[in-house]
Length: 113
Image (cartoon, rainbow, N blue to C red; front, side):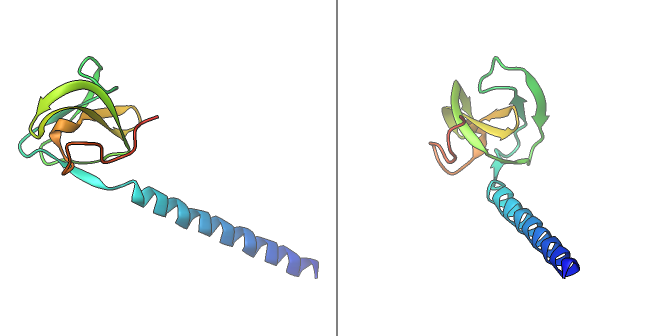
C-alpha cells in the first residue's frame, strides 16, 4: 500500500511538472511575436530607451525582434517615421520603434514597468 502511494505521489508530481513546462512554454510563445527591422537598415541596441544610452550591439539587416514591452524615450526619426517609443527586445536592451515594422504609429505592447 505504501509503495502504491509513493508511485501515485511521484506520478502526480511528474504530471504537475509537465503541466508547468507546457504552461511555461505557451506563455513564452505568446511573448515571442517578432517584428521585422526596416529593410536595408542596421539598428543600434541600447541599454535604455534613448540615444544617450550605451550601444551594446548592432542588429544586422533583415533582423526580426520580439517586443516584450514599450516605453517612451528619446524622439528618433527613422525608416517608419518619427517616434519617442522604444521597444524592449531583451533584458536591458532597447531599440527605437521608428525602425521596427509594427504596423502602428502607437504602442503594440504593454508599457515597461
